[in-house]
Image (tube, rainbow over all chains, first blue to last red; front, top):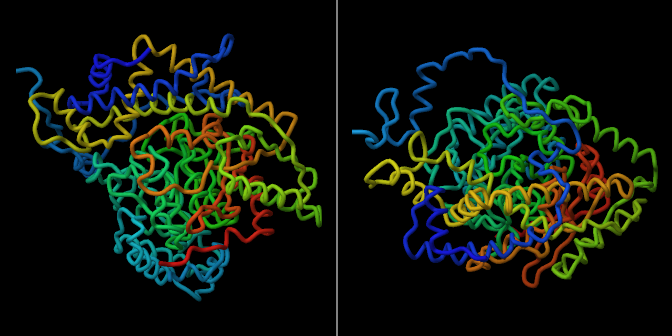
Length: 102
Length: 508
């Protein structure tokens, strides 16, 4: 099984990446090479094996913590400004993006 | 030459600082001068003398208290540019974040600052920590101080290069698939990746969240202990930070106490300090891909451990090679998810021209990310997409458990630690494998399994190889969960018996 041009464009769209036709062709070639590498996994008999998401879950009891359901202190105006200073386009306390709905 | 190089350890530097024989400001000033003088290495991405000197002056005030001053007061270190810092820019070596200024400090950064360490600035690395040679930096490759035409390794390449060149007493790094151990090995310095969950990931720019772990790089094991112990500890702001390590509280002091207790045990054993220690040597780490010069240096290191009383046991880690496809499914999958936050809205690069919101996002991402990052995002998106999730992602997670079980089987009855090479070869030349990105992935074979298992592991210098200028070789020491202190004590015994960690590259 190999990745087609159609697959590459589908993946790029899902990943929100814009590829030129040349980049798309190179990506197809590279992804097929990578697919050859990761296809080795298909040959492994994993029947009865549970997928592992946290590396220490076989060693000790792992539970994801939830923070207490209480209100946290609101950020100060200065902190908000520092945070928003990284935005490429902003107005007062708003992040600006192109119009979505006319 | 920076003043701190007159001291062979953080401990001896501390003594001089506390006795006021040298000031934090003098150390910082000379280190900044050296960093500028070695700009050819491209180890630093951002230096701000005012910020550094302000930290040094604060350290000098603390040092007025003498023995009451924090343990690292005045010690010059630097941070991999994957840790967010207030003041210094934080770029992850990406065009995407070229202008980013963090409103907060990473936990690792604030912990080291609270311990008194003085930051010299931000260190080069592979973009978003994706790479093994520091060639994927948007700001140019860092260079190996042993040979400027060779890579320093990656992704923490700037960290290892800075320590090897004597530009900093120590540096922070991050390790997702080997990114602390591999550059440490290739630059002839020492590095440790602790057990997953012992050091906070808060403020460490995310790559593969089930693998990412911070660790220090320094000249030798004793300095690593000085840095790792205060870095570690539970942090409620990291959802995977551990509250306890085998029933012990995860807090500074734990690793130090374990080191002291192991060192005492070794001292008590006299001329055979490591008597009773079983070193597992996996046959799979010495296969056809291992270069003879690396094999020779690692064998000599194993012989040194045997001369200290340790016993060598042949073991098998049968899925060593499978760790490569497993890692290169799981890490890109997590990366594609983590990096979806870069949309050009709240922070990061935004394209100049676009017709709508969708185009703004995709164009910003394509312009902001380098080729390796785009490649891994594409792979990750593919293995998580409808129809492939079970076949690739879940299958990789199942094989991950088998790899973890292999290590546990070895530790259960056969051996106490595992040793072998860190890399199959010494540092490659900058530019090699440019046309074949997967070739670099294959060279991660000895470090990936440990990362998938979340085990602690380190690299210590153990010799030289290469066909031109001598290039360093690293020995990998892998321990069971939460054995960081013991690993460092073992490495310290090795470094008492050898002088590889004291070798310094000729200054060009």
